[in-house]
Every structure is written in structure tokens, then in C-alpha cells.
Image (cartoon, rainbow, N blue to C red; front, side, top):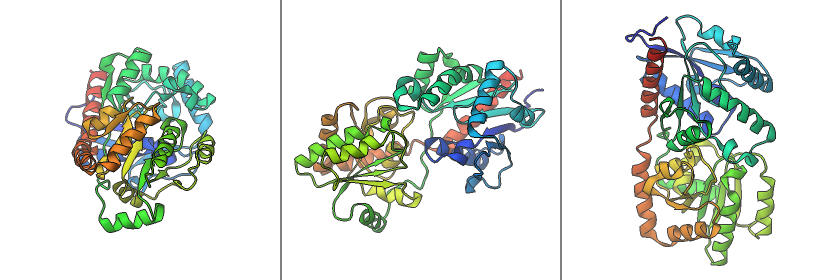
Length: 391
């Protein structure tokens, strides 16, 4: 079998994250698939694949796409995929779909790659479990520490969503540099400065009587909400009126953060907004006096990019991928230094000229990250992988 240069590359694409999750991996899987189908149909024929273990359906934007699924419990699915790599036996539920001419390439969009004898592309978002294992469950750390070395070794090519993730793959796993390709994610066009009336409406719902700072993302330890709360406590002692709105679904090990709010006397100054409807996120970003992302580790950092696209000033960590994504359009602080975070926020909220400059620079910076570009670069990688594999 060979990949004809004039024909579209047939790809079986793991859409599982978009079916079962709601965070960054889900957005990556869905938006990349949408743009591959929309702009790269002349070079890629996409078929979707997912494990339908919980009865979830395809995202509405992909409801008409050709798809395949299996029904297997989530633990059984993960362990059977791992077993296929450990025994080097083709994983039958997937191998049967990639047999023959179409599809001939498999793209694993999350950290789960079955063993196959056809070419494979694996997207690696981060190696948080290696750098900060204490922020994962023991079972997940075990699975990923065993599995990811096998998955990255078996993949024909790897997509890293940032140069930082690429360096981690090379440094921690000894992955050949030429095997890892950095393809940045994009920002959805819905993230743009919102009209004043929408901003006022959303602000009235989340912080009706005071200006607010904002954190967006799954509520879990690596997001470093503790540093933000200590910084807020310092700012409140100085008399700043701002609330901190924390938006995002609750992850694990978050109960200590709720207790810290009480211990610091911030019960009237912190709003746990929970899941914020998609339509409310752009005006919530736009209305923020400052968006905080003091994460210990980010594989990419969607909230920083979305905030910049909405014209919000950003203060974020100076570690992992965040300086790479935000460039000079944000203020950077050490994530373990709440005093530095407080100082940076103080600058933004008390110096209108600085805040305006950050807003403008953020808009320019965010415009560089486009899903159309990610789709084009991914399609080009598919073609190179297929051409090399079948040469």
C-alpha cells in the first residue's frame, strides 16, 4: 500500500476527548476536527472514532461526520489499549478500521495510542504527571508513567502543542527531536472584545457591585488558586475593592482551596462561579480588570489566550508554556510568589495606561493563534507521515 500524492490522506481521528470531556483536550479535538473538515477536505478525508462508554454523543459541530465507535468501560478501554502496546499486538477494534485503503492513518488526540501497524500521529498536550505527579491520582500517574513512554515510542510522529511540551518529551523520554512537531492550538473567533451591554449584563451576574479579577479553568491544584487567594488577601489589606471570580468545573483536591478562602477572611471577596456558559465567557473576560493564570504548569494555556483575544490584561506564570504563548503581551510572575502576583495585579489595576497597553498587545498576540493554521499544519504532517511510512 502507498499514499498517492494526489489523493486525500484518509485519517481515523480520535474524537473521544470532545465526546467525554469539557476542558482543553476537548476543545483541541473538536476544533481541529472541524477545521480539518472545513478547510482541508481536499487533502484529508476524516473519519471520527470514539469509545461510547457513557452514551455521550458527538459534538453538534461534528454530528454529520462519518464516525465509528465501540462500547467499552473507560478503565477497560484504557487498560486494553495499554496492553496492546505492551504485547505489541494490533488493537483489533481500531486495527479493523484502519485496514486497507481508508483510513490509513490514525491520530490519537489525547494520551492514549493503541498499537497499530499503520502510521500513527500522537498529540501530546503536557507531561504534568511527570513534573507534578502529586497533582494526579495515583492510578492515573501509574497509567501515564507506564503508558506514555510506550505511546510516544510507538507513534510515527508526535504533535506537541508548545515548544515547552516538545522540550519535555526530548528531556524526559529521550524522544528524537525530529519526531516531535510543534503545532500551536488556536483561539475561537467567539473570543473577542464583547459589547458594553453584554459585559455589564454578565458583570451584574457575577460581581454586581465591584470590579473583579478573573481565573478560568478546571479547579485543580496545578492551577495554583492558593497563590491567587494569598495575593488577593494582600490586595484587600491595601484597600483594593476587587473580587476574584473563579470560573470552571471543580476538579479534584479542591476542598483545601475552599477552606483557604475562609481562613483568609475572603468569603465576601471570592465567587466560585462554577461552569460558565460558553456565551458568557467572552464578556466575562472582557469585563475583567485583570485575568490571572498563576499555574504551576500549562501545556498550552487556553485561558491566557482567550483573555488576550477578548482584550483583557493578563498576569500569568513565568514557567512552562505560558511565556511562549503570551510573549510580551502579559506580565509574568514566579508561580510560588504570591507577593509578586499581588504586585503585578496592583500595577494593572492602578495604572490605566499599562492596562490599556496590555489589552492592545494581547489582541495582537492572540490573533497569531488560528485553528485554520493548526489544521493546515496538521494536514501537512499527515501527508509527510504517510509518504515516509509507505515510501
